[in-house]
Length: 62
Image 1 (tube, rainbow, N blue to C red):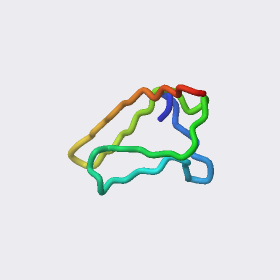
Image 2 (tube, rainbow, N blue to C red; image 1 turned 60 degrees about the vertical axis):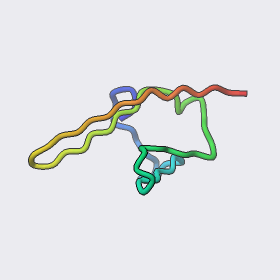
Image 3 (cartoon, helix red, strand yellow; image 1 turned 135 degrees about the vertical axis):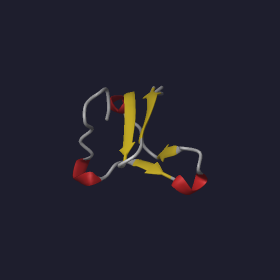
């Protein structure tokens, strides 16, 4: 989600790159747009547990 709305990843893809093997919840990107700024949420759920995480992304431009 972005800003409490389902985020429409174009074609199921994103210019954000996740590295889960680093185990530090890091997201890398080679390009950033002002429109990428906002509050992002992730929800993971199975039969016994629901986990949620939020982050606010600020884009500071040149």
